[in-house]
Amino acid sequence: MKFAYRLLHPKVVFLLVTKHQNKTNVMTLAWSMPVEYDTIAIAISRENYSYELLSKSKEFTLNVLPIEKLDIIWKAGTTSGREIDKIKKLGIELEEGVKIKIPHIKIAMAFLECKIEKEIKTKNHSLIIAKIVHAWADEKVFKDTWLEGCSVPMHVGKKFFTTNLKYFEPK
Image (cartoon, rainbow, N blue to C red):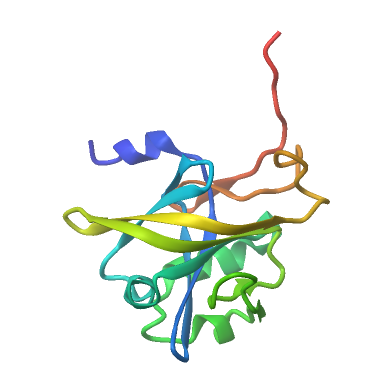
């Protein structure tokens, strides 16, 4: 049971951007799932600095960076925003949100802007159910679905990541 959740991976890796007042943070997040066509659920530890910010703002963005930015993805998930300004330290350039006050990452291949609708608390984490109010994807990598080989980073577990290199269709 210790690693049962890893049977559910690989999952697309997002960079979660949160902001409250003048404080902005980024963290890596792979615990997500669609709930409805315009609704997503994410799981986040209530000890995370990002949780503190999003619980106040009630909004966030989920950003997909290409696998070539794996160092940023990894460092955003293995350092604390309470200790350092990760946006500045990782050289992340932000752009204003389209429909919310939370920015998205300028170099993102795709991003979702979300507003929290409900929170369900478990032992250590919160399941955040949010309405997607805006979605954008670069046409070079997404046309109705991610294009084969476009380097969408997916977390396998521990320090291991993969991409959507090749698709297969049933006969």
